[in-house]
Amino acid sequence: MKQMILKTVALLLFLASITVQGQSGNTNGIPYGNNPKAGKYIDAGDAKMYYEVYGKGEPIILLHGGIMGSIGEMSGFIEKLKIDHMVIAMATRGHGRSEIGTEKITYELKANDVLAVIDAVTKDSITILGFSDGAYTAYKVASMYPDRVKKLVAIGAGEQIPGLREVPAFTAQRFDLNSDFWEARLALMPEPEKLEEFWRQMTHFYNTMVASKELFNSIQCPVLVLAGELDRNAPLATVIAAYQMIPDSQLGIVPNTGHVVFMENFEAVWASVEPFLKSQK
Image (cartoon, rainbow, N blue to C red):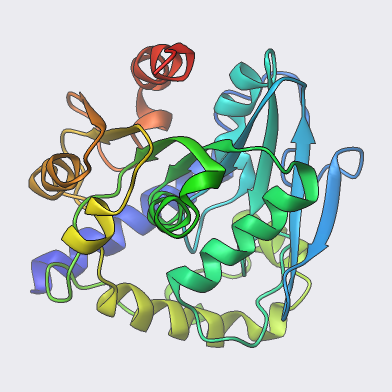
């Protein structure tokens, strides 16, 4: 148990370090996640959701990872996709410029947040690309709203049941709030005073969430399940299990990479994503 906690802490610190280093794949200086030229808000009931739109063409929405995730981490995908897609890059509830709100965190709530953003931009069906927490949310959107999801790319998100992993508590004491990373993140947040309570909610949520047969069997659209071979947050066996339970799915595993596979080897990930998106199926 202690070893699992240490591994999770190491993963979180690694995510923080790579985020501080910069936005992966962003070579033109666009401040993804904090771009007033592209940013918009939509009321999702108890909270306002922030999103940015880039490019024109087939619509695709990007959902970043949880807790330390941000629109900025998806910049490599934005750069590639905006050439021939309309890219909707969303800050999920409690991240970036999106509000935390007052409702209990569930994937149903998060899926409805996503649908509110989609509806604000297009009434058409859409492709979703999600990473980690964003991928689990994407699974839920596809399950709840099958007519609205054309395709799904899920990165770093396998079968999950309570007890399979233990996510340690997220607290201010565990992070240096004077770091450039957290100063920048807190400056974006509309409700920074709610951050620690949000972290407590998310810790409980992640340790009790279920993503298993009932969810995966209900997904009707084509799904590309992607992961790093050495992913400790979504171990390979759980990713393969999810792939096997989704009726129309493809599997891509990138050797010698971990949870943030698209930051460690973006070209290998893109080599799987691009043909999947272009296929007529």
